[in-house]
Image (tube, rainbow, N blue to C red):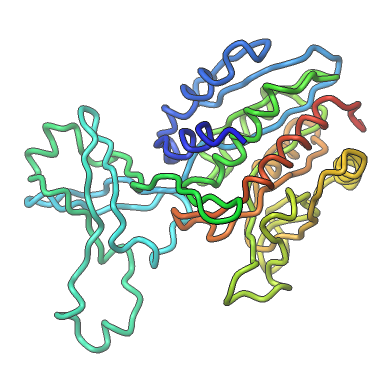
Length: 348
């Protein structure tokens, strides 16, 4: 387990549309381990290895959920909008970094004190439009630091090891997937051409994967992401049966909660191929039907005349919370499985 890499890539700032530092870190880490790297005008980073006749595209998204400056009042208090699926209830009292063009400014998310709330207000969820960011700076000072409408905002969170083999960090969705793809590209000796794509703007509509799949024209597309681990109180096993420490998750289907619309029905041959490789290599895995979300594989499957697609996910507790918990053992197993896929004959 390369814990230093996981820590660095987790703590790197990169909300949707502002992922700049993450590809730079990846380029440095993969230097000398690939056959080529390039970045497109949208920000997707393409890393190629191997030169077979068929192409396997593996995508992991670099963006994290976060915020963006919407308004700055005369006293310097910042109102914000969300970038990606940020739940209101996790925002209050979060410490943030406001990434000005000239200087990073630290701040905290505040709201009206409970002591001056009316009784009815105390019973209600404080929504994000009632919150603001306090940096201690005036509007003029913020302007001199390059903070204006449109400035990205990330959470101040470092990686921490928990007991057992667990770690908690921000942006595990999907820096855990980026970590897996980096480490697999380092060790794999591909049987085909592998194009690892570190995509951008997944959290706001699978945008990077949509265009990169058209650019790569793969024979098979695989997304690497995180998924909901439900092995904790207040959630039923049938709602989220995936558990930490039981291996990476091979997706059967995902999409909207009411219909699985707008998602991926994983190609059954692809799913069987991954399961067979895991069984032969004695790599533990879990299967999942995920209601309520999807991944870059959904975009890849619709490129050109269609791309057979699948998804491997890492179980994560508290997804989209800025404090996501994952298992180092699951990550190690995921790296091994992904490397086996790169080294094996493709089923199409």
